[in-house]
Structures are given as structure tokens and as C-alpha cells.
Image (cartoon, rainbow, N blue to C red; front, side, top):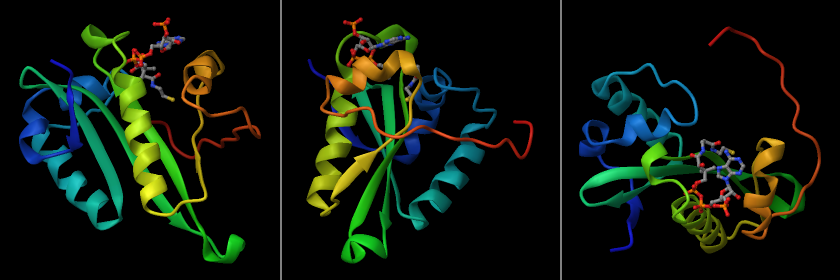
Length: 144
Ligand SMILES: CC(C)(COP(=O)(O)OP(=O)(O)OC[C@H]1O[C@@H](n2cnc3c(N)ncnc32)[C@H](O)[C@@H]1OP(=O)(O)O)[C@@H](O)C(=O)NCCC(=O)NCCS
């Protein structure tokens, strides 16, 4: 059965969500700590979705909507933290999550969606309709 894609819910913190996200970067949170942060993220308007298959979370991605002054106050969608559980890669789940968030940004009236990724993932995003644009820049302010 294809995975269900839906918004993150509280029981997901004990059901594969943190292990899935750890495929992107170490998380370092207990399920309870992650749940507290989830509430703060929701208040800040971050949409976190998950892919669920056979009762387990196997994928996640987030969308942040930003209203600009430029472009007559138009909105931009930022896709962040796309991750698929290491046991579930290569089955289209990452693609389905990114497509879902692009669709959500379109529904919310965004004029574009942007994200940054490693060079090796450029073909993955190009297959989903994205094109290379600009350069990502970073300054590290704390060791994490
Ligand atoms: C990138 C990621 C989300 C893809 O998820 P997925 O469900 O495997 O993706 P799909 O099945 O939809 O697409 C598979 C394609 O992803 C790309 N891909 C996946 N992992 C890759 C990697 N390590 N290097 C390069 N390309 C990769 C390939 O193009 C692959 O196509 P192929 O199977 O024909 O080789 C997943 O591998 C992951 O969680 N990686 C670790 C976290 C990460 O890097 N997230 C992206 C942040 S921008």
C-alpha cells in the first residue's frame, strides 16, 4: 500500500519520526522534548508533514510560508528538512513529500518555492521541477 502523507501528530514522536529525521542530521531530543518544540513550530506557522506506512513514520518534510514586502506582498514557500528513513529510501517517498509541500505552497498562493540542498541532490530536485538558482551561503554561529 502506498504511504499516507499527512501532518505530523503527537504519537509520531514515539513511532519512527525522530529516527527518520536523524537520517538528515542528529536530532538529540527525547520524544517529549521534540513534542514541545513541535508546538512552538506550529505557532510559528511551520507545516511538518510525514509519510506513514504500516503504522510507522518513514518520511518527513517541512514548509515555511514567508510573506514578502516585495512582489506586492507575495508569499514564498521554503522547503526544509526532507528526510526518509534509511530502510525506506528509493521508493519515491522523498519525491512524494516534496511534491505534497509544493502543492500546499501553490494552494496557499505562493509565487515560488525555494530550498537549499547538497550538489549531489540537485538531480533529485530537478526531477521534481526545481532548477538550480543562486548559491547557498552560511555562517556558523554555534557548534551544533
Ligand atoms: C534525499 C532523500 C530525501 C530521498 O528520499 P527517497 O525517498 O529515497 O527519494 P525517492 O525515492 O523519491 O527518489 C530517489 C532518488 O533520490 C536521489 N537520492 C537519494 N539519496 C541520494 C544520495 N545520497 N545522493 C544522491 N542522490 C540521492 C537519487 O536521485 C534517487 O534516484 P535513484 O533511486 O534513481 O538513484 C533521502 O535519501 C534522505 O532522507 N537522505 C538523507 C537526508 C537528506 O539528504 N535530505 C535532503 C535534504 S535537502
